[in-house]
Length: 292
Image 1 (cartoon, rainbow, N blue to C red):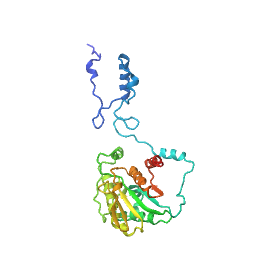
Image 2 (cartoon, helix red, strand yellow):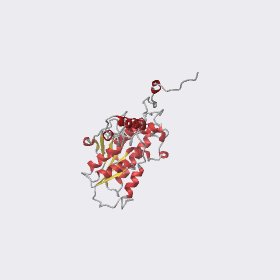
Image 3 (cartoon, rainbow, N blue to C red):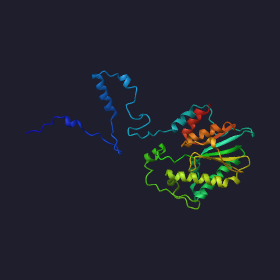
């Protein structure tokens, strides 16, 4: 007797495929076709339905499994530069009486240090301190303060963990106890761990507060934000000592946006704000807030 291959209602009960987190994967195209079919047989206004995205998250920003899409942000920077008739390649000359402030991304400064020039964590912190003091002492810049802003890594549910997870570099990374006399391990691998970055930012911030006051020129200061174990704190080091700047306390975890906060505050007391950063996010924010 020949086997009957006729489909039954039991064949319709197929389990949906799951991703690695056992979340069901729904094909949006199939869903749309089914909704289109239902609209033909029932009184459904598709124009009203299609006002909303048929997805749990915006598809332009996220993949179907909820992970953020990776974009080439450098293209935006190139586009912005192409629309500028005059692009400055160096700082213009200003009167010596002009008050200037300098703001930089702390972790970008740390990563720019040549790893062949230090051996211990104390050596690394001292290099960052010397570079900062040299900026204050540079007569061509006429700076009254240098602000170093670090990212915060004390939020376990932060979206900053998305990129390391996408790269697969967030697993099985050792967390080191930082001590001044301890030798720095493989530096690039060390900086892949969020816990290591947080500890290093805290160590460097405390080191500068403790040792830099005797090297800071009179009338000038170093401001540190985001790098402390309590991420909201902002400290200022001057030749006379260390103090807190409570008006700049912030729970922002990104150095990108926190740098804008400091720039906005310092623009009230300084005629020129210099922001050293190669991040396209910061460039876009500065373009937006420039006239505000």
